Image 1 (cartoon, rainbow, N blue to C red):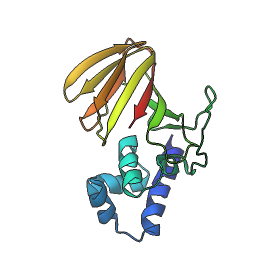
Image 2 (cartoon, rainbow, N blue to C red; image 1 turned 90 degrees about the vertical axis):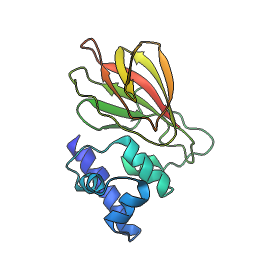
Image 3 (cartoon, one colour; image 1 turned 120 degrees about the vertical axis):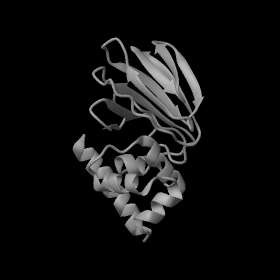
Image 4 (cartoon, one colour; image 1 turned 180 degrees about the vertical axis):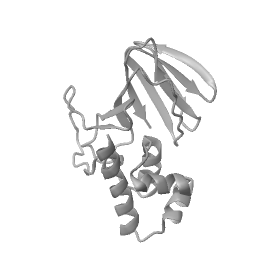
Length: 182
């Protein structure tokens, strides 16, 4: 995980330097607190997908370029075989597997998200747009703007992702869900 975070941090710094922008300008243009952005570029802290999405949208690049260092190439279709999506572990508790990393110009970012059960802390984030979650395995607690919901296998939710939201695995078991970020 630490190496992946460092690589993302290098890509963030490289993008900013290529655009010849001060760190403060990037943070301001993307609506990210300067200290939070500085920490992200340091490679010493977890970097949320929502932060990466804000930066990608603002600079008109794909989320994949920041997360995985690869530019999507397909424009007609892209197949992701079971268990073969490009993945990143943001923390030891969260693993994201991209399901459309090779499709250029997509309007949604689908991921299989795996959350480990030993995490009692809920990490909240916000991002522009909307989000759809479908629980594939296990149960999770999802908190959206202070409202706590329990979702079990087969349950789904669609919500405004500008609302602070976070999740954690329940019942001492790993939870896996499909997250589509629009």
